[in-house]
View 1: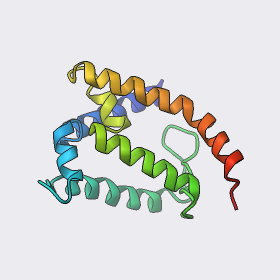
View 2: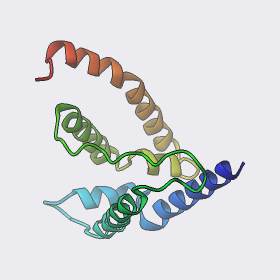
View 3: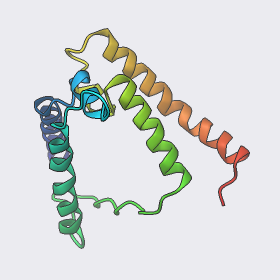
View 4: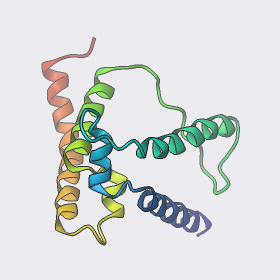
Length: 144
């Protein structure tokens, strides 16, 4: 029960942070991505405000156990490979076209109207199709 409470608390805090920072405002996100047009640099502070604490958290969790049990995830592999590049390109295309990524998409469902629900459906379809697409790519272009 304690674990569920802290998960709910963390999710609520995350959603509130996305809303307050403007990450659920598609025009703000697309303004951030429009580097050669009408660029809006304010989300750079949001990115820094996420990356810096996470870098510190990775350091602080080494050799420790979570308060609510289980294990901390291991840091991701820093190697640059086909899966990372392809995933980043797909994520960036969706983020640039729609102005949403998974967290803000879910956070904006209650007020974003039908376009946000369409995005969520497309995102879920993409999640489901990803293993099939990866298998096809692995067959067509074996990794070195």
